[in-house]
Every structure is written in structure tokens, then in C-alpha cells.
Image (cartoon, rainbow, N blue to C red; front, side, top):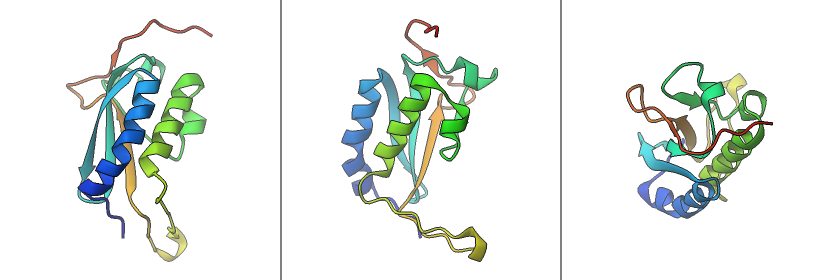
Length: 127
């Protein structure tokens, strides 16, 4: 059964903030329903407009980061996900037998809600 406590969040926060600072991003860290560690990226130096498709925010699917994102956005999201999992993360899920057992779930959003979009602060990068 997935469970993440406030103490777990406190232990993972320094690594998460280090990744946010490394990429010039601002975000909030919270725990939802005692099972999910949530990072909401509010603003930063990475341009996510190509991935938002006209929406104010986007929910990042942690299983498809490498397929749906490129460049610095992919690097940032992968490092953020690794920091959110931490050293004690485990995942022994088996959907074939309807068995779900992991340390905790992770949730990343770019922008915080439909009325609080992500704010791009840096200069647009061109490849």
C-alpha cells in the first residue's frame, strides 16, 4: 500500500528543491491523500508551451516523460522524478494479478490549476 508521510516529504524536499534550483524553477511540494507526493511547478526558465497545447497547465505522465518531452524539459522532469522517488522508493506493482504495492505515487504538474498557469520566466531557446 502506497504511503507518504509529512516526514517523508520533509526528507525528500532538499533533493527536490536542488533540482528546481538547478533549472531555475519555482514550485510547491505537497502530499495528497497520504499516498502521493505532488510537485506543482509554478514558473521557471524552461519553455513548456509546446507541450501545453493551449492549456493553462499540464499533468506530466511520469511513465512517458522520455517519449513526450525533449531537451532540457525532459532532463528536468527526469531529474525531478528521481528526486521525488528518493533512495527508499520501490515499486512491486503487478497489474496482471491486480496487485499494487509501492512506497508512494508521484504527481508532477506544470502550472498549478486551470486558473493559475505556468509562467515562463526565461528567454525562449531555439535549437
